Image (cartoon, rainbow, N blue to C red):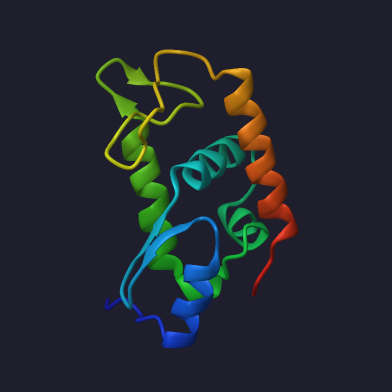
Length: 125
């Protein structure tokens, strides 16, 4: 199965989304805030496609293969030596400042709520 390439128009739309870090004709990278929001919402029972739509992404343009890969990557990032740490992303090069061994601060919660509000208001596709 080959992955669908994004057109220049699709790339422009993807790059304008505040939750996109980088988009090329073959791939898209998402912000740590988006990944955190996605993981929390999925664990709350919200379908991934609905979350993507609410955050300005068209699931049909991303394609099932990319969505499946995104979800798999999130699951893999949740695995720790001690098991899965609920509602926290492990630190990586793209998740600076997120520490899975401590609860979120009030500022982090406020920022996440603000990001979610922007996500809900913004629906490009």
